[in-house]
Length: 495
Ligand SMILES: [Zn+2]
Image (cartoon, rainbow, N blue to C red; front, side):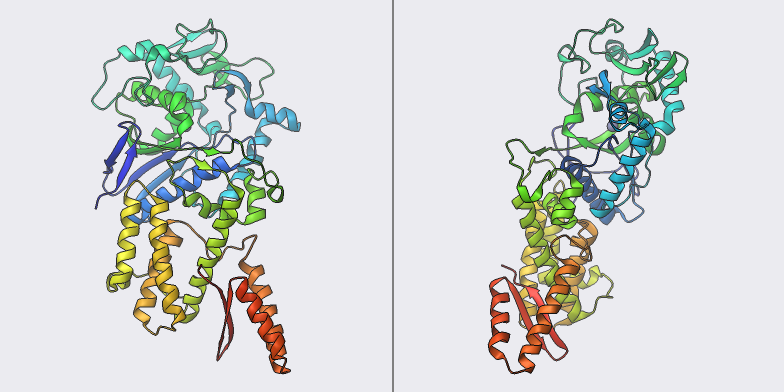
C-alpha cells in the first residue's frame, strides 16, 4: 500500500513518491529562539518527528535527510516587516546580547526535544551562519528583475514575479494559501510602507539603524535579512532546488511559505517543494490553567509535572492536521495510559528477556500480530493517522494482556508482540519505555518494591490480615501483584 500525504498545494491526499526513490528530502521550519518551548512547539516538532520516523521505517535509517533550521536572527513582530525584533526585544528585557539570548534558548529547546525523545535533525542550519548566502540570493533576485532596492532595504517585487514565465510545477504567489494578490498586503497591518512599489511586496533585506544589534554589511549598506529568506537559502543548500517535503505550522502558509516559494522559484527557475505539510495549532483559548499544572503551556514545566512521555503520547493521540485542545486532564490521562502500557511491556520483557532483536519475520509468522501490524501500518500510511494507528495497537495490547494473565508459553507469539511494540511504539511513535517520568517510572517502581517488601514481611510474621489488606488496596488502585517463584511482580491493570 502506498503512503499518502495530505498536500496543502492540492488540498488533497496524494500518493507519496520521493524524487530520489532512495532518499526522502525533508525540511521543517524550526523555532525562533527567544523564549522557552511551549506546547505549540511541542506539537509541531513531535508531529514531524513521527512523520520522519515513519519515513525512516519505510525508506530505511539512511533513507531520510531531515533538515530543521534555527532562526537566531530575530524577525519582526508585525508579521515579519514592521515592529520590533523579537530576539532583540528579549535581549533588552534580559539585559543580554541577542547572541546570548539565541544560544541560551536554543540550548533550552534541544533539552526539551531530547526529553521528548525527538531525534536530532540530520542538519541544523542557523540563519546567522548563512548571511553571506542570503545576501547573494538577494543579489540574484535583483538581477532577475524580481527585487528592487529602496532606501537601503531590498524588496521582492510580487507583480514582477507573477508576470515571470514559470516552468512546469512552479506556482504563482498566493498559490499555496489560495489567496489573490490583491488581498495580500505582505503582512503589513499598519500604514503603507512608502519604500515599497506595492503593498504586497515583502522584505528580503532590511536597512538597520544604529541601535540594531545584529547587523551585517551588504551591497546596500548595513542591514539584516528579512524573515523568509533564510528558509529558501538553507533548504536548497542541503536539499537542492526542488525537494520532497516541507513542513511547518498552518499559520505559516501565509506569508512565510508563500514568500519562500516565490523567492526560491524565482531564483532557481524550478519548482520548490512537492509536498507541503502543515500541522494544526494547539487551542488554549478558554482554558483555565489547572492549579496543579501551573503555567502548563510551558513545556519544561509540563514535563516536570506530568512527564515527557505523557506529553508526547498526548500529542501522538491527535492527528497532526487536527487542532489540539489543550487539556491538562487529558495529558495526565495520556500519562496513565502510557504507564499501563509500560507495565505490560515490562512484564512481557521479563517473561521473554529484553535483549531480543526486533524481527519483522516474527510478526509475519503470527497472524494475530500481523493483523495488528498491518492495520497500524495502513493508518500510518494514511497521512500519518496516529490516533487511529494507536487505537489498533491497543487492540494488540489487550490481546497481549490476556496472554500474560494466562501465563502463555507461546514464545514465538510473545516475541512477535515484542517486535510489534518495539517497532510501533518505540521506533515509530518515539515512546521511550525507559524514560523516568514525573508520575511513574523509577519512582513508582521504588515505591512498589517498598510495598511488596512490607507485604512479604507481614506474611513472614503470619500477619495475613495486613498482607491481604495491602493486596486489596493495591487492587483498588489498579495495581496487580503476582507471586512467583522468584518473588513478587507488579503491573497495572489494563482497564
Ligand atoms: Zn521557514
